[in-house]
Length: 446
Image (tube, rainbow, N blue to C red; front, side, top):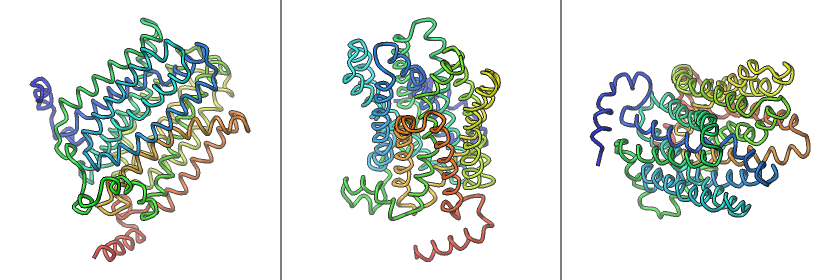
């Protein structure tokens, strides 16, 4: 039953204003739910590895635990898209929330106090299934319910909520909470925040598309296993989806790799305190997340592919290198470090249109499968970031890892420009190649 308080607040929000901002009014509370959930999930993101290393674990063990977490995030990301098609996004969000709470309780109450490597790896690692199921299922809900002309901006607001929590406001909460109640108690605070996000989703989000399966008639006639596998075989049935998946994997691979070595880089090599480093990450996230809806709105005007290629791929390549090298060249200037970290956060927003492109590169019946691949690719980056760092650092050192990350962003830009053309892209309406593609698609569907 819907809470009267939520009903009153929801009805007080002016829908025309939400539409002008690019937020589907019926989904507005879902953004709040994702924000709260991801704040809780992000509280530990920038101090878990140092916490483990200071409590009897080597940094390599901490990296291995986080890498295993990345594997389960990948699984959860695929399940978010595939299960949303099968049982509906709302049920997937609830399932993800329950999994998060259960494994966090086991992690905090048993594994962490016992300092058990196996226990920590299993409880924290398996918890990784949960957050993508909650967050990415809502992204699937957005792509299913938002009008085409609002899809880029609606996705931008999703990423504002997502990155607003992980790591931005999560790190901010950690800064103040650690001072007041300590590191271990702050883990428990994250549980409260996640639970509040689950409650908001259950009570306040009433858009009906996400309540049931996202299946067409053909999919309803096929079995459960075939429906789930549809989120895999689309990679060779629609090769442009495979290309888009490569771009999405690259998007946040360096970002998640940074969680492993940036804390040590800034505190040990540059000389920042833990508070200064967490402040840098928080400011970067706040600035970056504020540009998500702006870039989403921009992409709806000038084109998804253009923004993805130039703002996302090329921009992130340059800004990431500056974020790493400027603090060393400037003698550890906090102001310059924050400035170029913010620039990197802003250019990452250039990948916002990727979700809109995914759902536009295939036939209508495959939209759910396309979003399953999008979620899967997003999850893979959570694994590849730490894994690439672990592998490349042994061969080339940290600086070599940075140059490899830069090369990945260049590959992303080339792939976006060469393979992600769609006639539904707002920026391609006068492109002769897009018009030819539209005619070809029409001929194939007749």
